[in-house]
Each structure stands twice: as structure tokens, then as C-alpha cells.
Image (cartoon, rainbow, N blue to C red):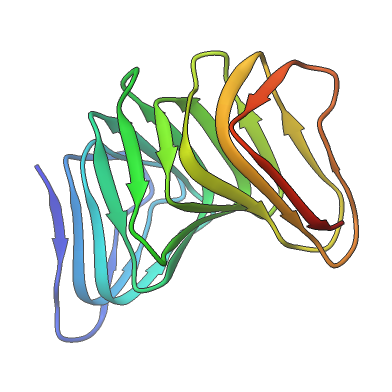
Length: 178
């Protein structure tokens, strides 16, 4: 089933275990995710209220779906593990932010993403028309594993983004600083 949060006030806590949902809709109130794994197999729609990642892992899986945020949504670890050829599309003007690790496991990435630490691309990743941005100070790594990901944009105030020694294919690369 889906998770729908729309209380006029207060906070909804996901508990401490793993949670698996078909869709996520938040129209108000506050939501604190599990410190475990929150798996979403469908659309993620957050129009009001706050989302707290609780240092947990979010996995976006299943068929093609959209993610729509007020402007951005910060997850601790974010895995895009869609079915082969399926797409996770972040709505225009929005950004899916991974505070610790962004993992492109399978499927296509469309829209805006930001890796605040490292990016790992699995061999089964399918690319996409999206852009993963590296915008924070400090060193970051991209681990390729012979995968194909969407575009990368590097615009850091300081530090480097290293590609390591594993093969990586990207759809585009833009470097403005860093």
C-alpha cells in the first residue's frame, strides 16, 4: 500500500525497522523516516511539511515513476534501483539530494540529483537524461563498476571529484569549478 501523510500538525515516525511502500504522498505535517531502509516502488510526491531522513536508506525501485518535492528532498543514502529500462524522473526544478551516498543501481535517471559525498554506478545502470551535480566543498569519488549514468556537473568551491580506476560511462560532463 501507499503511505499518505497529511496531518494538520505534528510528526509521523516510521519506526526503526525497514518499511516498504507502493507510493509516498505528503501534503502536510512532518515525517521522520526509519533509520533502516525505506523502499518506495512508485511515485514520491511531497508538497508540504518536512521530511527527515533519520540517517536511513531510501530505495526507489519498480517501474517508471516520478519524484516531486517542494524544491529538494534530502535523503541520507539514496539508491535508484528501478527495473531495467525504467526511469526515476525528478520533477522539473526539483533536486533529489543524497547526503551520504548516491547509488545508481539500475534504470534511468531523469531530472536533477545532487551527490554530497560519493556516487556509485553499478554495471546494470542504464543512463538517463538527468544531471548529477557535485556542489559541496571537499573531495568526492565516483565509482564506475562499468556502468552508464546520466550527466555529471562539477561546480565545487574546493576539492576534487575523482573517477577512480573502475570503468564509467556518462551521458555528459560539465565542469565549471572544482
